[in-house]
Structure formats: C-alpha cells, structure tokens
Amino acid sequence: MRQKKQTGDSTFKIKGDQLVDFVKELLKEGNIRRILIKDGKGKTYMEIPVTIGVIGFFVAPVLIAVGALAAMVGAFEVEIIRK
Image (cartoon, rainbow, N blue to C red; front, side, top):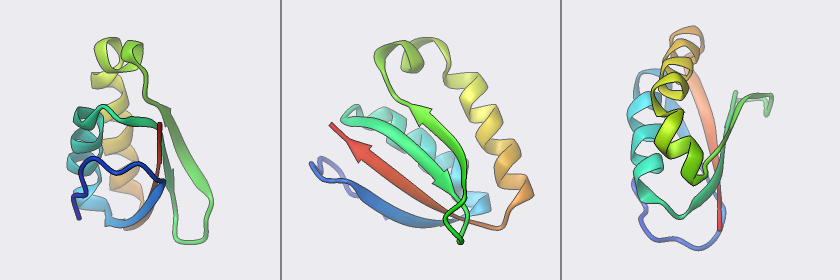
C-alpha cells in the first residue's frame, strides 16, 4: 500500500479503519500537493491541500476530521496529487 517517492498521481482503495493512518503517512511524505478522499462512487468527501502551512498548523484538526469521516463510511478511494 505504501509507495514512496512517486512522481505521478495515484489512487488507493482504503478501508475506513485504515484511513487515518494512511493519511498520516501521506502527510509525512512531503511530495504531495493534495489529497482527495472519495467514496466508492467517486463522490469527494474531503479535499486536503498539503502545503507547509497545513503540515505545521492544521495537522491535528485535519486528522480529527479524517477520523470522523472514517467512522461514517466503510471504504474510501484516496487520490493523491503529487508535485
């Protein structure tokens, strides 16, 4: 599931209970511009812009929101837009 140092965009299918840990790993990577969290039908639930400001200041609130979302839906598609 982990794919480090990619240059292209990627989409992963993630179970709800794995979502928070997966997003934490993505935030640590540093080469990601945006994370889109969608349901299986393609509806976007959350779009996370990943910039220096988001990493430094908004990590905790973002992860709380991701955790609440993970509790509501069973499976997600996470689209990663890289630099």
